[in-house]
Image 1 (cartoon, rainbow, N blue to C red):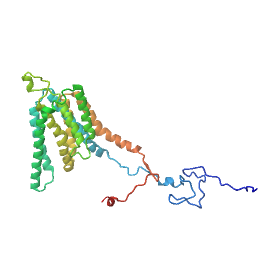
Image 2 (tube, rainbow, N blue to C red):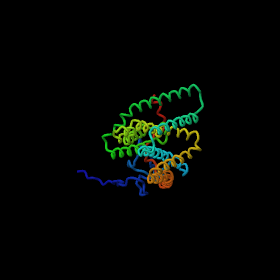
Image 3 (tube, rainbow, N blue to C red):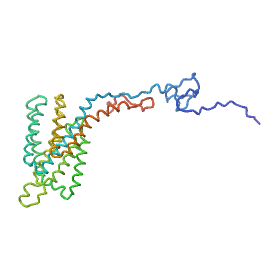
Length: 327
């Protein structure tokens, strides 16, 4: 019988992970390399003391300036002011302080002045192309006004079977969706979701306006006329679709006056709402102050607590331009 000769068994290293200086590797004679295609006498999850030397913190961190952030936050505050102005117009019509015909003619005047101002701020190019653009804009406006006026009798009856509380809840939800989904980075033209939400909210509010000429005929005066719905939709288009386009061009061509426009819109929203609902004006002023002044301050203060780490454990990124493979 053959006897087993004693052999020396090398103790296995059970310590995995980062090198803690306890001799987890074979020694300095065999240096460790961070490669997977070469067989090395190390465990698969072995790392040496150089592992944390590649640690990088807050790479590409942007330093914000307070007043620059305040100017950007003014876009959000201005859109909130637009919603407040639209609700103010509805409250005036709902209480009978403003007739739809007066509001419609004033909206037409504002649209003409705004379009002229928009064209004046635009680039001065070929006169023929500008004439074609104005003609196409006139055609689009005519088509929209014709279809809106023709479908106003149908739109005002969409929510007749819905309770008033439900209509107001849907209006609040749609206006909130408009504010959340509005493309503040590029508001010209506004997003389809935000614009559709605002138009749906205007239809809901128009369905709860009191009638005007129906009361004199002995009919139900709580039912709105088609002119109410048409006026609300026209002003919704002015406030939520056309005004953001003019505001964006004003921001690009006259950035010095953009801050004054934001301040004027905020004061108009608070003043208009305060003329008919003082409590709402106080709430609106608090919201505008928080969005414009407090939120940028919190953003800058929280930048010091930001701690993003990057290192060799990150996933590999292909930095080569692969567009040539897609042709």
